[in-house]
Image (cartoon, rainbow, N blue to C red; front, side):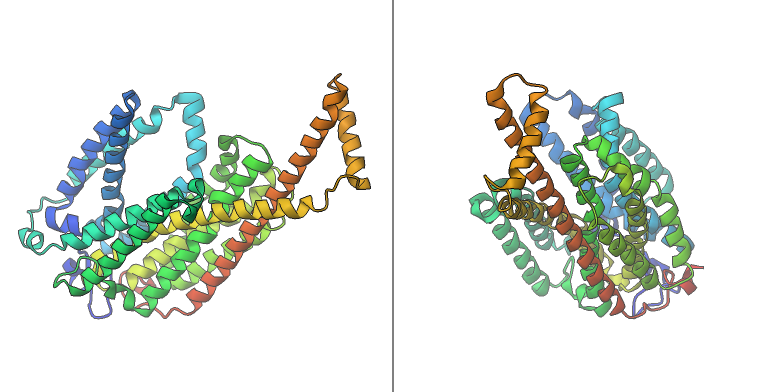
Length: 470
């Protein structure tokens, strides 16, 4: 990392400052022990039948994941040679984007062919390998007791608890009708109050854990906003395409996921590699612009869908989305770290995780709500043109009644079944129109992202900029 007031090449120890836990306890203690506990938890979950025990194990499972993922960026910057930083960060970006596009298909494969238990047991194998590699590849470090004494425990607790409450409120928002539910209102309001208290705490404590001053840089603030637009526009392939294929085309989730696996997830190997090649040679802003423009093109293509579209019709869109996924997040992550002050690395990683978890959850639930509301609106508007006695409606019902009569001898049920079929057609078209509305949101989010990238200034020279990356 390079800061505006620090030469990282001259001071590599400052430039590779790890996250708070790794700084205090060392990477071995932070990763090896929790990895082995994760192995035990993953092995045990499929055998548990008690509901409360299952909830407890899943809580521990998620808590341990919260340790691993934020440490990844800091492992790259702390342990890899400078010339490999871009590659390491690109691998981190690849993991995030690949799993989002391949998860549904992989789940279907395990359930249909291997056994659902391997959804957990695969984690045990990977976590064991992670523990071994961490043990072999990281140095022994002592405990930094001074940092423990100066720790901002209040800030960590306030932010973590506040974001967890907001996440839970958003997760249950659609199911409980948002602010019509006291539970959702309480979770979101309580979480927002705790996050506000966190910012107050960081402003008054002598040693803040994640000082908001890291957000005061022009480029960093613009980057956080751009990452938000990226998370909204990336919903075009994470939510909208699968939603169309399951709701409109009537495919099972694993069948719908095959399109994203073959034409978005697997091509990421090429697109992320291309992003690394470009980032070593051109400004990260150009790479981000190419990625965001790809998202805009893919979303525009999505606004042209009809109910006749089949999985193969999404191939071109999915390939364009793969370029967007491979270029955008990788470039924005590297450009953000290029603009950060090494002394504020812990704060920056904390805010990246806020975006990665809570903002994507807010964006996903907001999109789900948007689709639900727009489907209701379009159903109503289409229904206004499907009135009893209308000649075209009568003709449509006549054709459907004829088809139903071929398979049913009960004359009294044929009209009812034909009417139900007509209602299904109305719902189908309403769903198509609502998904088109979703693609329009993704398109304008990408356009806003392009404008924000255009407002960014060049990053200071350093190991993550083209001259220093060679």
